Image (cartoon, rainbow, N blue to C red; front, side, top):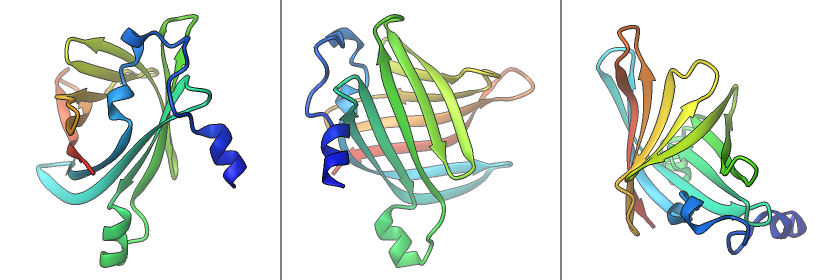
Length: 166
């Protein structure tokens, strides 16, 4: 297993990844967060989660593990299953953009990224009715939202996370 880890994980970004395109580099590391899920109506589920980001694939990619409830909470609450997923963000030098793929049990999503001022917006590429938005990124915190487009053309918050660095 060590050989796989050593081949997968990268200590630094690849030299061919321009610094101005290293949008996700500030997220490298381990984070705790409070997850607010808005399911259907105004019902809300609040749980502790963890999010771990690492450079991968010869420094061209950034992969994360999104775990909610956190591993500690799963043990404490006896909840073995919920969201345990991974996103691979791979920089594409040909398009000068990021190719993004998320998967968890029974789900997968392809997204494209754009950066506007202090926001990184990932939009699902098929129907374009779902977005992930990273904002307020600092050395010790960031804010993330999962938005869905309703029938009236309004973006509605489906999930909301405020993350703090471990």
